[in-house]
View 1: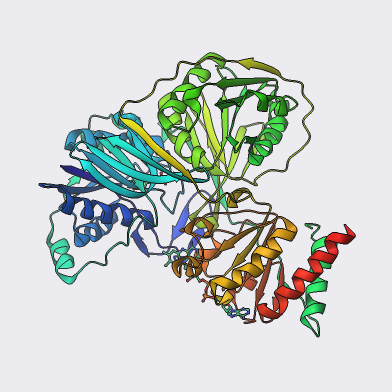
View 2 (view 1 turned 135 degrees about the vertical axis):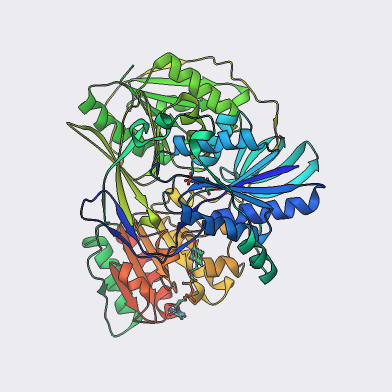
Length: 263
Length: 326
Ligand SMILES: Cc1cc2nc3c(=O)[nH]c(=O)nc-3n(C[C@H](O)[C@H](O)[C@H](O)COP(=O)(O)OP(=O)(O)OC[C@H]3O[C@@H](n4cnc5c(N)ncnc54)[C@H](O)[C@@H]3O)c2cc1C
Ligand SMILES: Nc1ncnc2c1ncn2[C@@H]1O[C@H](COP(=O)(O)O)[C@@H](O)[C@H]1O
């Protein structure tokens, strides 16, 4: 069974992010990680491999050279091989383009199951998984919480449904996106880290995947970032004082009614 | 290419979801500026009567009522939306970024080749066109995004992004029969409804959130009681969820839900970045914490530095009497 995991390297949540002078680009402190939700995808792939005979886990990202670090993290966890599709000078904000490239890679590489994270914590699109599935014309289930093998052609997954949970049987090939709760991602062992350091990670030129360069450049993008801004800061907090808890509570309710007008 | 606006209406527990009225209200404003018509689409089983509730918000309400739409299925809904799009030719298709919306819209946008902007919190129209406000990096940065080269545009908005206005239209209800294609590779085995909470956390107007400072799962009763009085939903920090005091569906924050209620009250929540990323867009924030240096105060409008076990009972009494006064 071929298990494909699409991962993304993203800025750490603690990384300092500044808007550059042109208001159109960001300066990100050099702290990057494997995307939070993708750790669950890699972990689930590894667990799946132990359940299925003769499986191979391939991880892949469309990113800059630096993203090799995230691929190595995935190998250190237990993935078998990794590919970097190099996006140098082709960096895009349009999820349709990224999804198109990843789906072309999937076609070339072959797959039975594709796993993605629910959402990248940088762009917060939550789009790539479903889009890749659409381009490959395979079923997808978003934000799964459980993945069980029924037989070598069918998986049974559990995912959020409006106001509850849904249990769905899906025929392979299929794509699933993972979220918190599905598993506890492992911390790589030192042997894994050693293996990852030595792993040969092929770099793929996206234009060799059957797409023309014109289809990948910013000009063809269907969305455009006009500018960035920092969110309006909240005015400083008003600390409510009083002699007794009753007095404080009374003042708070009054302020919420009369000043904030929310009650 | 049309220029109409289409709003995807979701039903839940036999009602139209509140967030759809927010979208309809905003779309009303946009459609006036764009001189376009408003189309609302409701897909479901036994939902025809719900269309009456939104005739004042749209010019046409397309109702697709059939057994196959009983439960949301991505294949069926994507196919149906594609067919409706082909027939009614809207330029802009809007939905809410709910569980359903998050699943349906990226696939639907890819299907019809539309520009896709998700989880937005605002939209403006000026002489240059549409400008969509989208928080990224956990809300640390706001990105203003615009569609281009696009025949159609699909946008999803977070619940609580817009105010609800009264509708002034008198829309026509159109019953559509759509032969939706079902993907035989997907077999919905069952859907279990959780213990029915009154409102969805993301749609709640008021949220009272407990952190580890609540000390014990039993103490969440205090929060439930206050929530009852003001019609709030109880939320939780990750520390609380990890300790199994509350369900994961109550978790607010980066690895939980992003909420923007009118009022958020944090009790015994320290205000770690991973938490504030999920609640920073709340309109009014109240923090109750005994540590004057707790980070949460940097994100709050009003703060009380005290033991929450002293404050909450007093707050409860105050809210009861405030409610009596009306
Ligand atoms: C990758 C990642 C993702 C994460 N995602 C999330 C997420 O989605 N949501 C989330 O919430 N966290 C998340 N976290 C965890 C987050 O960093 C914090 O650890 C967590 O939010 C802390 O929870 P807390 O505020 O309830 O607990 P604590 O940090 O322990 O704070 C308890 C607070 O209660 C106060 N307190 C104690 N007793 C009283 C009392 N009697 N009266 C008044 N105040 C009192 C204390 O002063 C303290 O400020 C994530 C962390 C990581 C690494
Ligand atoms: N550039 C990329 N390369 C590989 N996988 C990606 C990329 N961007 C997003 N993904 C995958 O798609 C998921 C959702 O991302 P997004 O739609 O950007 O929020 C991520 O969790 C990854 O699994």
